[in-house]
Image 1 (cartoon, rainbow, N blue to C red):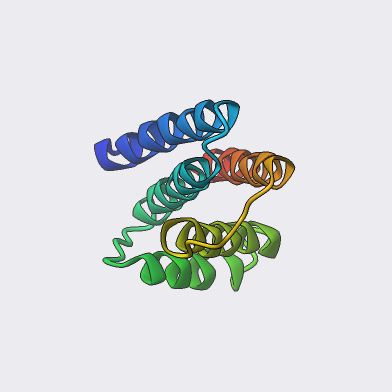
Image 2: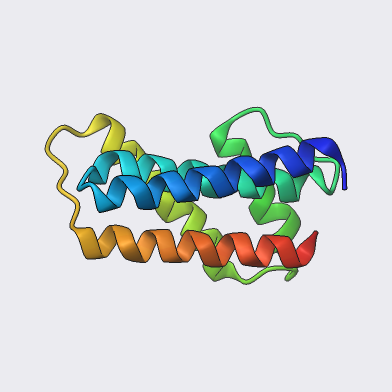
Length: 123
């Protein structure tokens, strides 16, 4: 497997562990941020496997949808997970009034882990 793909996957694994660590310490905003970046890097690995290298976060979302969701290679629920993480990360980083609940973040992390499992099956 290409070095870039392996590095993206390693980073995704590290970041999902960071998300769990932060959740265990009630650092919910930071946990959301790390969960999103785990999904982001996992999807970047998948896109790289097809020679795609989006330059922006929106580009990752769009190219994932075009190359894997619209073609039926992956379930739309996985795209929904990435979008949900993207939106939650934006709120966590920029909305000073947003409140997250621990169960909500646990579910989000679980969805990211499922996304990463499906990515590995496609590589």
